Length: 288
Ligand code: DGL
Image (cartoon, rainbow, N blue to C red; front, top):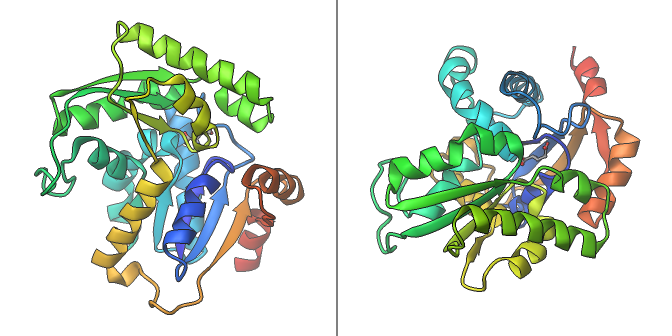
């Protein structure tokens, strides 16, 4: 089983692509609704909550966990991989959404630091739209500069966007909010048009059309769920011990730290399909 973690239900945008790309895999999705949103929490809190979630997913039988949440990936992943995983779960793995996105932006392989064969090395301006905490972490600009110093990065915190999406704000309200963030980013870059843009938060693909409408036509909008799904499929090809058999039935189990009924109703609206969440606390008790 593969664990997919998000602070809430935004990660369902990633999960949708994972199940489409790898129907034979069994995924356990865990949304930490009791403590969402993460975007404005301090780094220590994000680290502690992410670690607790990963431990839970390990206890539920996942040996590989994907942090679909950009905020958790930005703040907690590197520290967890370096300080915690080797001592506490050396046969397990935790992956995030940063590696695939940075590889897609830089055309440089994360593993060997070499240019990906057949791809041209990009230059110009990269726009990152993310939560406040992800922007403050500086993780995107840092990782990009290590691999492609010729790229310039400008980041924009979209402070109220997650709340507006969750609150099902009207389409014109969302468009004007997104246009405002794009305007701020363009002002910060002195009016220069970004060559590519990353929607670095699990919720933002739901308003990708608003970003596409607000950004200059020539800006390439990277599809994070698709890129992450391709990258996980490639990882499983290279690490077969985490992969299901080709003809396995696959499936998804949804867990939440919040109220399962409320979360299921909300997530079904958000996802556009019926989703039934179970309480992670009840499962924890059953396993004791
Ligand atoms: N899931 C978070 C992310 O991708 C956004 C929502 C939150 O603030 O918790 O950054």
